[in-house]
Length: 483
Image (cartoon, helix red, strand yellow):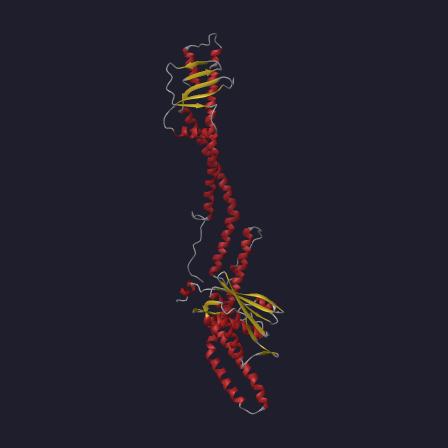
């Protein structure tokens, strides 16, 4: 296992999931509050001006109580002071009257007609008011709340309204902060309980498993949750169990490989001695000896084959490829010739000679390691013969830059147990005494070429293996092998 330590998130760090969720929640709530504040401040400003219109109209009622619609100068100034205006003008359908005014009203800087405008205009006017840093004299026109036919004009300062808007904004900001903190706290606690804590538990289990994958106590105990977190916990537990079993099997295989490598020399010497003795026995003119000698040869040959396959699997590792371009038809023909030459001119199954039918188009070319691909096809043909097949047919076709090769035999098919452990060394053999290394070697070679091998079909009519290879050898593969 790697000794490099993986950094673990702590609760106090700014990069932790909890801290990010808290900050994001506050940020999103503040954004929502701003979107609410924008029309709210424009409405507050419009209501403020409408109140000034209503107050100005109320101030003119004192004039209606006098016979000549006139009041003293002192009362006029008091009415203007309480209305917060420099002048008040009433406009009726047929005439325009100056009702109340200072001696010299100031120059008007901006005019607002509350009878006109739309939503966006009011928002723009509100933010324009907030952006001012000096006082402006406003001329505000609105409809009298007492008589829709009477328009009221008021001249007043903008600063009081802007200060009132600042106060309103401050109250909105304070409320927004309280709401955002309260909401963020609730969301934070909910996410902490539903997501963050289970994720920390999963992360801790993964880290502990990485440190000691063979320790059974470091397997996560999944909860009963039915959501995505519960599914992740159960899948992690299953993955840890499967990986631990695979590691244990790999350890046993590594131990076996080391042991076999140590006894290789002595075993080969013993087999060589047995071969010499068998040759001498063959020269003895004894019917009983001649009857036993072929079986002895066969037993020694099986022992040599078993030893060689095991040693090759342990020693080979990742196949080293030497790609070249060649015709696949010729290679299949060589495999058929090699199968005929095995065991002195033609192995038989019952009374039928084993044959390799070449169904590959002669013009079909491939670019890969010729020797390794020969090994692949020869292994598949040998497995078919040992399983009881009398014939193997090899066919191939190109599609979308790939070469698909199918190796089909007419054997009895694979047993269900053999299918489950098809590509497992020392476990996937379909016959008694087999190592199961043939298909493992086939898969390793095909994958080294950037392809894969699958069991396409297996029943009482026969078995079909499908090889999927790239039509051209990738440059990255050449670089990986140092070529």
